[in-house]
Length: 407
Image (tube, rainbow, N blue to C red):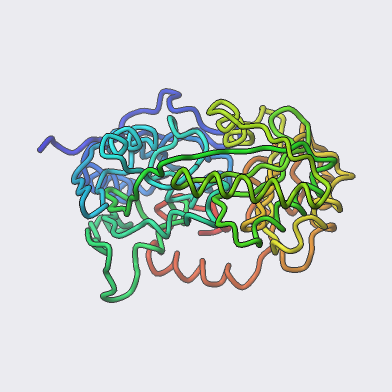
């Protein structure tokens, strides 16, 4: 085994958000022992560690609240174990989604996540941010695919949770705590995941729509219509024209039946039966539409009850977003705004229904209101988050302040 990696001076790579303070140092671990050594050194020198993978989601949340070093995980990129017959894979978190997809495809399998920027997004970053795409409601998200984890905690211990088998019900489901924790509770160093077969056929169809709310209403009706869709969405990305987009997958006969049934239902509702078949480039453009906004742009993400999706989009239309992608399966709406004013955030809050939630994957500092809440207004979950942070990282060693001030 190689000797532990030492913290080294940070020299501008990887690039970090403009509003982050400059890190004191950087570590580039290749083994779990390297991460343990970095944690030990950070504790001894009284600064924090911020795990960073591909850097595709660093704009989400608050900047680090005290002196820190970057813990770059892209060197933790090894495949450790792959059992195609059991449909499980174990690997380090620095491997990219695209690299893992290539390995699995050789055996006709996949990790069923349609997350943006797969060539840059690391597995650890995707699971730490609980990122997914339009197929989440049908295929599940990161939590549904996780079987086990190895994590280096803030006291420099390597902790294991779960295992390498699909059925594992012993004890508390500790690994799930680290999914969606944004690197605030520890550093993932190994992951075991459930994989599945690549479907025989995949098909994405798009219809022109009079407006995004009308497309959302049609998408919701199709989603509830017992058609077993993989995704149904309303969008005006990438070319600004409102569309209803439907994704199908499965055997050839099933997909052809779904296509015919959808066309018949839309025709009966007054829609054109003509649909565009989207190729890989069209699908990539939609998937990555809001993943890398311009320096002055904002991206807002709203989660609402799916039944309220069309009404919400109608209410938000006067704010004139430059792009919208709205999923009918789970009520997730992503909106892009070009060079927003400081009044944008409170304006959106005033228009939201009671049971919705607003977060900001990207919002330029100049557009942030005084009471900026990138994770949404404080609620009961913040008390739970504080309790978890105090239990697992009482000294605030990992990503301090990203969720809540003082943690």
